[in-house]
Image (tube, rainbow, N blue to C red):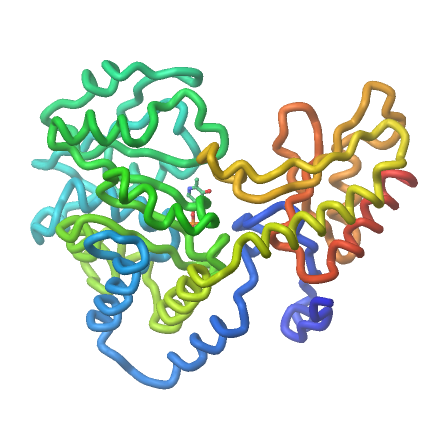
Length: 381
Ligand SMILES: *Cc1c(COP(=O)(O)O)cnc(C)c1O
């Protein structure tokens, strides 16, 4: 069972959460394996030159992604700021200094309407102007070709949840590259499967940003950027440790670099068939504890990584409420789960009021406690 006594949180009076909602930033991201924590502690004992450390860590990222170069970032959102800055300012110190004022630079970033997510703010944070193409359900190739002009700094591509309606990445790369425009990708939540570390680079993306604190199980405040050597150099010029840069507000410390590099090395060595089957078992236990409750349909939904959407990379247990459901409303259920101690967080972002149990962040054995709490709330609420 997970350790129930964390002295620090107890001292501050912060209650524990059972996180059945996935790698969600506001619930703490993920839990680092002990080897990652000890690598961070190890790295805390010496001073090093941060340029040297960043270069060596970048080389590890390049090797694991198959990209020309790599960089540790302060999360995928920070990676997106650096992607935009790199494509607008390059490594020219005068332009690096000027951002987010983009006077004298290409500053338009083309984005599918189907890719509008809260995180596209990060491109604007660097000073870019977003140019939308397509609609929520479909996009034509000519719309992308037509949107590219002499002010286009990049075409962005975001693997969020439900990105239906966007052109496929390889088609976007083809159209953009014919016009000498780089393609920048946010693939924050697309790991696992580990194949995605190389897949988008192989498709020709010029820069790809991933979260380190989601499925990679690195420090929550880290991410990685991989791609073309000149653009990674430009991304670095636009960020920490360089003090006069747009990305300086997203600094990464030496301990975090040790943590994310170690997490990545463990990640690519992980047997994900075994991990998936453990997650499936946790779902099945929850399903079996709830399936006799009248008015509910509780079923296993398998991972669909081929959909290339975030949240499609793990199995889940889904609780559907029938027409004749007599129990508490979904709102009340979520509130009761939150109010308990430990609090419980589930995924409620479905279209039909269903509740999904996403097992990726359940600590070993926590599924038993979770199933009990769900049963209590669903039957006594
Ligand atoms: C989580 C997420 C981000 C932000 O990643 P961080 O590593 O938390 O900065 C960006 N885009 C998408 C689609 C995400 O899911």
